[in-house]
Image (cartoon, rainbow, N blue to C red; front, side, top):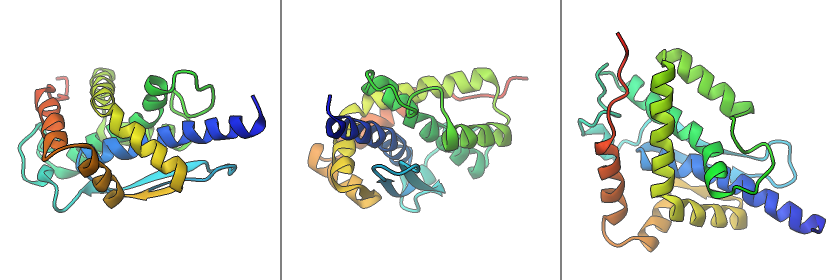
Amino acid sequence: MTARVERREENLDVAYHEAGHFVIAHTLGLDTVDVRIYPGSPTTGYAVWRHQFHPGSRRNKRDGWLYRSEWGDWPRSAGLAMWVATYAGPLTVNLLRPGCRNYTRLPPKGADKHHLNEVTHILQLTKRQRRQLRAFAQRLIWRNNELIERVALELARHKTLTGNDVNRIIVEMFEGNAWSANNEALIDEMRPVRKTP
């Protein structure tokens, strides 16, 4: 394999990793800002979302377990969504790019590991709760694998995408509200992540 092909494959691995973060954050209603990759840079990429739900998101109006949890506070609900979105980056590479052998795979490293540990500590998540959230992330990734792949390929080509770009891709790929309804059904069928007594 030539150096150019290796570099392109590595960029694609990073694009899948960042697309996993971004698409799952977007799916969960977090206010997604942008996602970037930096080929050949030590900071290979990042996905940015605000630590709150998008103002127009249905998540602000619904009673679903992820959004109005048993704890009843928005910071905890958004925190659960942030945990799932953070874990989704390396998990996406594991599931959708199994031949990848670089840092973007599980277990989480670097900023992902730091962010997961921070949210886990703040929310005081138990091992059981983290297992439930990992399973939820995996189901969301499989449910959205075609969208993640499309976003990753666009990201590899353009190096930067915004939340509006992802909305445009969703409209191009899905008729009506098929994408939203598909994910709402999955989110609604998931059991709450409850605190153990």
